[in-house]
Image 1 (cartoon, protein in one colour):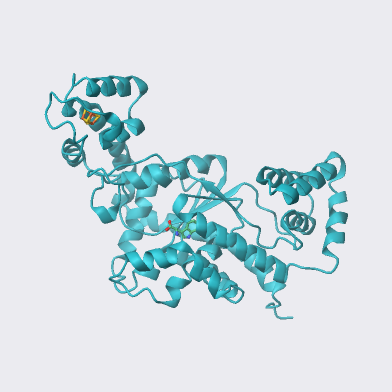
Image 2 (image 1 turned 90 degrees about the horizontal axis):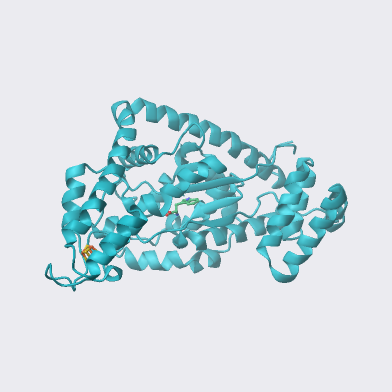
Length: 403
Ligand code: TRP
Ligand code: SF4
């Protein structure tokens, strides 16, 4: 087992919902674009996850995948630095999902909050399926396959990363234990030298006594910086969290800071509310939508003063406008010195500038769809190289490797 230990890797996925909107951009995608420059990034289209709720009609799947990937590229995801791929093109996801299913108690899956929530919300569909129950487990496989340090997601996905950690822990305990693990780990720790060994021991103690995640990070960085061989490294990483080798390291949530992105009706921007502005929407349509966007209901007349804090347009100003514009608009609103259309004008300009840029970036890919196909193929190859390494180790520790 002398595969390299990936460090600072991030992995995240999105279900292919078709064209993305500004809520998706500010809620997730923008963060991905930033992360690709600071981390080794893997971003994938979770097309199998789409099937868990949308299995009846799959006819639009390829279209939705393509549109979403073009949106990613439009937003600035750069396939030259990030690995971009489609889940179903990497069959190792399915294999790991199957193997993890053997060790996952049903109760863990039934207890994931999204399971009952979604079943209640999507009443028109039969979600009493094996695949839907397995949604979080498939997600765990997606994640653990790449052994990322971080999973950048929003609040709604935290429970899924949490169960991923529990499954990793269970897997490592079942298949990563070795006789005398603690003794072996102490021996490996000595290889950290001075002051590494002491720092490691201290951070590990601190983590165990107080659950201090900062300490966990310290212990892990000491190990990763030491450049030991893979066996010692995995043992020491595992020793940080428990008493087994870390074959599938526990990833951490990287909570995406999400500004409030209101839709046109003032509710959260969401495809299901039909209140969205598309990432690549044309200028006229953006302007038309924003001109009729919901404002503070107290400003029925131009002469009525308003309160930006009660206005969804203001939430967009907070994302799109500089401090000076925000200042002008807010005081103008409160004193009724400006009307809502005056207030919306600079916002429309800013949003249109953004969607125009997205359109420009998307254009070459729309003109030459083959380019998208190829970059996804190359991405899948890169992803598979990483996935194969993990699966080789997983198979080996489960005694699935023929003699
Ligand atoms: N469940 C995620 C969502 O709906 C998508 C997803 C699938 C994902 N697999 C993942 C996100 C792995 C992060 C990591 O947004
Ligand atoms: Fe909203 Fe601007 Fe109108 Fe005030 S002036 S209510 S902030 S749109």
